[in-house]
Length: 166
Image (tube, rainbow, N blue to C red; front, side):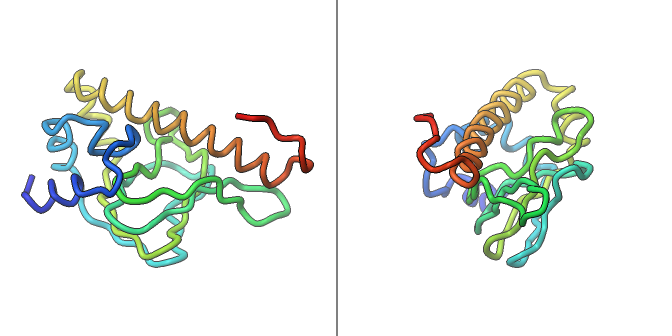
């Protein structure tokens, strides 16, 4: 891993969040994972993936922001969370049948590190310690995203005053 690769992933504005790549994985395991990455950029409005589609890749954001959304029949997709630098875009690649549970769209110009999901799963199979860190990281992200989605959907669609104090 180059010094610039390490710098770009350790210079995140909020390194305290356990959802961030830099906090979730040890330097050794970040390096192993980054060896599989390549840079991919998305313009504003580009769809990274659609809910229900096949998961072949996932991303860690270098710069910019991505809106995570859910399909709402008869309406425009509802953005349930916006993620930014150092954060994971996509967790469905880790769970069979490897289909997206959310959609994702670039809200700003976005620079990412893109990972081939099958290659990362193979790396995880070969390194149980890496697999453990990855499962913990993705589990934290998953839990956070599901709570965010629930809150956002209640904000959008529940009758006024009927929300809970989650």
